[in-house]
Length: 173
Ligand SMILES: [Mg+2]
Image 1 (cartoon, rainbow, N blue to C red):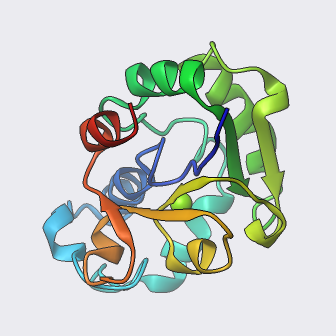
Image 2 (cartoon, rainbow, N blue to C red):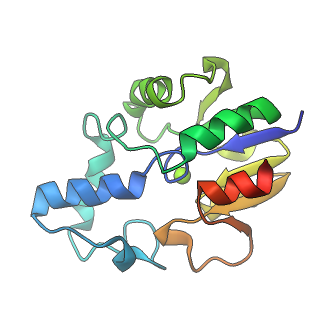
Image 3 (cartoon, rainbow, N blue to C red):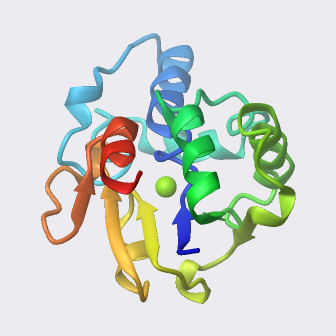
């Protein structure tokens, strides 16, 4: 079985949507997703960047994220064909660990906890395929690297790309 490494934030989970929701709750302005295109993570928001950096430390920021469309159904199929590991560089936000574990249990109940890897750096993982939204996670990976489309990576051109979960379904299944 080929080993498939899958990221959480902005791959399984709609982290960008959560930032937009928190920003709206805090400042009363709903930012269009397209405004964030081609800008580094966080930089697409018009201002209040220091508050933006605090959002991930707030209770339930990670617990209340929505799964990205199609991720549950496609992951269930991938899990039968590949040796799947969910790898999240979560140590920057230690309080996110129980939230992420609960979240995976709720939305991906067909996965076993032994498939979850919460780490500091993804440089330690190896496998055949990695799906991630952040170039620095992909760069040090030994296998085939796929960037998962998010507003902050649309200008990155040196990785193979999955536009969404339907795209993963048609290319990996
Ligand atoms: Mg991510």
